[in-house]
Image (tube, rainbow, N blue to C red; front, side, top):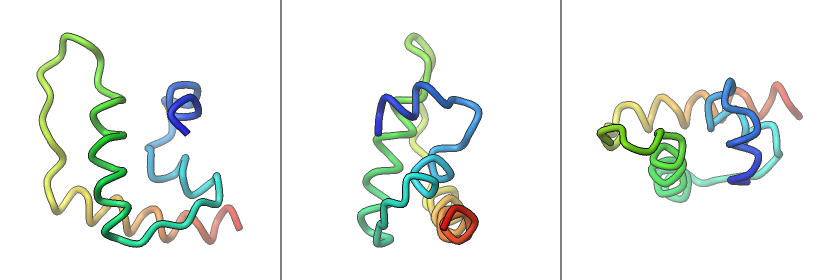
Length: 70
């Protein structure tokens, strides 16, 4: 999964995982999203954790995208 995120930086991480067909509960998605968000930051940049609202919006997008890639 990490390799795919690095190979496809134009897609948001929630779309990459939706495209893969992997199914997350919200709690699992929240933990995964925080890690993925950090991995996508360039080294040397100041990191800011995603807010709860950003994670909720990403999860909604993930759920909608899952049906697009089904």
